[in-house]
Image 1 (cartoon, rainbow, N blue to C red):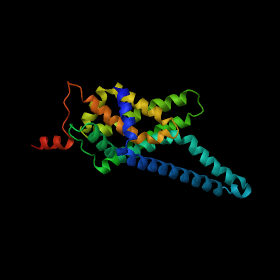
Image 2: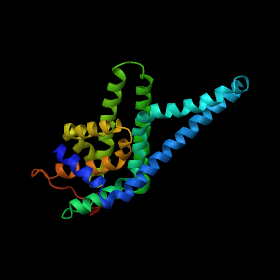
Image 3: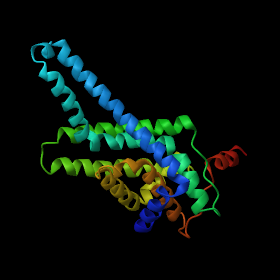
Image 4: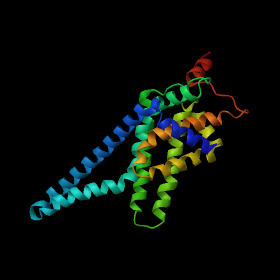
Length: 243
C-alpha cells in the first residue's frame, strides 16, 4: 500500500493540475527561509555592534555575514520540517481538492478546514517541530545520536501532522486520532518517507505538497477496507447530531 501511495503522490506533485500550487509552495518556503536568514544576520550584527567588535576587528563584519549564511545552510534540514508544517497548513486543502477530484471522483468530497484553523494547525505543528529539531541541532556534535533523534522525531511529527490534516477533511478530531492510532504503523511508515525526503537537498522543498498528496492517498486507501464505511463529512455529522 505504501509504495503505491508514494508513487501516486509523486505523479500528482508534478502533474499540471498541481504545478501552480507546487511553485507557490516552493516560493513561500524559500521566503520563510530567507526571513530566517535576515533575522539571523541582523542578530549577529546587533551582537557585534553592541560590543563594538566590528570597529576593533572590521573583518568580523564579513565573517559574521558568511557565518550566518553557512549557519542557515547547515540548519536548513532542521528548519525545514517546521517550515513545511506552516506551508502544508496553508496549501493542504488546495492539494487535497485536486487529488480527490482527479483520483477519487466517485467518493464524497472532503470539507475544507476553516482557513484560520488550518493555519493554526500548521503553526502548532511548526512550533512543536521547531522545538524538537532545536534539541536535535544541539546534539549536532554527538555522532549517531543526532541523526537518529532527527529522523525518528520528524518521522513521527510529519506523519501525525499530514495525516491529521488530510483525514480532518472527513473526520472529527476525535475520530482522526482514533484512525491514526488504529493504523499507526502505516501512518508512521509514511512519516519515514517524508523524513527521508527532508534530508535530500533541493528535493526537500516539495515536502509540503508531496506530503499533503501522499496522506490524502493514504487516507483514501485505508478507507477502502470493506470493514469500514467512509465517515460522514464533518458538516454532515454536525447536521445529523443537530437533528
